[in-house]
Amino acid sequence: SDPDLVARAAAAKAKLGDKVFVLGHHYQRDEVIQFADVTGDSFKLAREAAARPQAEYIVFCGVHFMAESADILTGDAQQVVLPDLAAGCSMADMASAEQVAECWDVLTDAGIAGSTVPVSYMNSSADIKAFTGRNGGTICTSSNARRALDWAFEQGERVLFLPDQHLGRNTAVRDLGLSLDDCVVYNPHKPNGGLTTEELRSAKMILWRGHCSVHGRFSLDSVNEVRERVPGVNVLVHPECRHEVVAAADHVGSTEYIIKTLEAAPAGSKWAIGTELNLVRRLANRFAAEDKQISFLDKTVCFCSTMNRIDLPHLVWALESLADGRVVNRIQVDPETEKYAKVALERMLALP
Ligand code: 13P
Ligand code: SF4
Image (cartoon, rainbow, N blue to C red; front, side, top):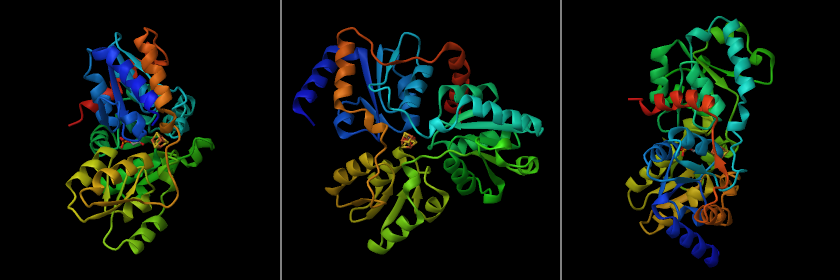
């Protein structure tokens, strides 16, 4: 990265001292990650944000829904900054508040809203989190989805899982032992979600028709191809991948789990990783010295374009502005939304 920008970021951060705390998601670019005070998966970063009451500014190097969650979990005195407001998430955008309200009306008309518990993936807007809190549900991340679903099935008969159908299906089938037939997909673009009332009533998991465009690119062919090309390879993927990919993998887990698994792996082991490319490249470089051979699960380049929006020039701009006393790109959830979204997020943080 540009040495001039590196020096400017370091100087602005030093000037701000304890006033600023920089969080970095594992999918961020190396040039940005070097300035993170803490790196983590979505769950770890939500907890870290909540645990920094002394920092006036939280600079969130990640995407919009993460910064919103940090704002919800921090006090009013703390200001959360997202260095580029265009850093959204295509998956989170697949469920709007209006669509979800309409879905809840469909479940109400089918007589099942009262026995359905919403579980929303962290990768959703604050509005969806508020809907979840208002209707007795919880948030989950990829590292606690199993515990969230266990909890939800203690509260009700079925789950409405938003917005990632893959994480919902993979967790239900892999971790809870439900069958694929227990899951139906609700399509917000079709009347009644494209489902009959009977299908809705008999489902254990009503999965929202959303997905991650990055993880959606891994296929069963990518797994088969790497197994042929690299004998003895361990396939390790994120649970946002499609069900057939997860079913064919050796290990499945969040970004933090992926890192921990590689840390514990023996020298000489070979790994193909199905997640975002910034992280995979960083891990490949880091573990090369320990003779752990790490490659990307697919041959096509696969960055998360919105995570990549946060680059060094944007970080420098955010930090220098704060150092000059100007708060830019503040992410602030309105109080009514925040109140109910916080209920749902705190239920997650309290999961056993
Ligand atoms: P985790 O870091 O929680 O595994 O989430 C991955 C992701 O897609 C974030 O957008
Ligand atoms: Fe959203 Fe997928 Fe990017 Fe994560 S990797 S921010 S889920 S588009």
